[in-house]
Length: 456
Image (cartoon, rainbow, N blue to C red):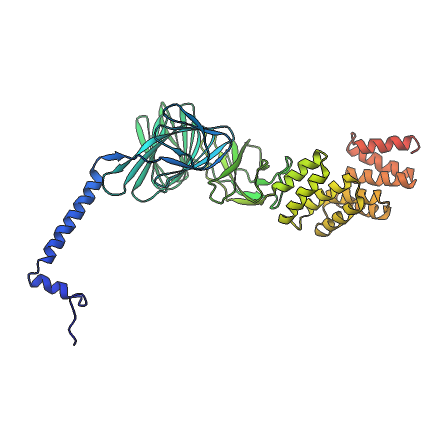
């Protein structure tokens, strides 16, 4: 067998022990020294960290930071909070921050938060930080780098974060802590408790109470492609037993680090509309159930809605009578939704209001081919045929609506007005009166009835 060097022979170092080689002794000494330094790194006093405590990643709505020296500045992405700085978020605002250890905070709804300081061991990378929440709502994800710890100071206690996600709600001197995953230790007046997921703690001057959280709502979407309108109910969910309300959050990222909108509804509500957002992309939504004690359950699964700011802008311009500008915005929206019957209906309506009935007809007919049972589009198409004097096509559109809904007041009036023009006053009056029986204040049906009475 060929000779091998000590580096090549796995047993060569064992032989060195028997040969009295001094190297193992010094190796043992080195191990003791390294272990000792590690122990010192763990037990030596923590030293103040001079670098920034929290860095703002995302900000929406009004938010300011008040420094320890009294100066006030607007909060924008990239702003760094130092020890003693106080962050204040307005109602409806949202701020996402990352601590120097990698923990994340999402602060909303008139919250006030103070960077209380970080300390670091003399040797090694162990870091301990504290952030104090004095009012409002904060969602905390304590999953920073290894060796780091995070404490959340509260008006009447402290929560120790150890790789977890939980929500803090501070109202006056009462704090509700809702743990969604991981683990957390909570210290309040006179006692400390450990929480498990699905449990919450209520802390006030009288002590700490542990309770179960509400269940996560089961969410389902009404629409997957939509423009934001006040009447659109885009998010819906099933009721949660004993819930006293629901919070709906909207974000442009699936991790919900950038909260672009949120709303709260009552216990009897099962649907919510998405507020007008300055986004033209996918919006993620999720729902939380709220208990009467302020504890908030875990979120529902995230849903997705495809949004279009251009579509919303087009509707606003349409309502303002700026029809050319509305069509420009709708054209941009079509790049995102090229085969959407609802968008085609809105485009057709701008052309209709312009009096460009032939162009409106083409667009409505394309929309009808995509969604033959879309009654709002069918009605507008019927009226377009009416003005183009294609009465057979108009009657077909109105009767297609009534086949789905015999009590559709607009379609009944549309037939009545068409028969008026054709000179069939008996049928015209019959259909108009049916429309008024369903909707007595129907303005167009009242006008048609007046014309029939005047011989028109």
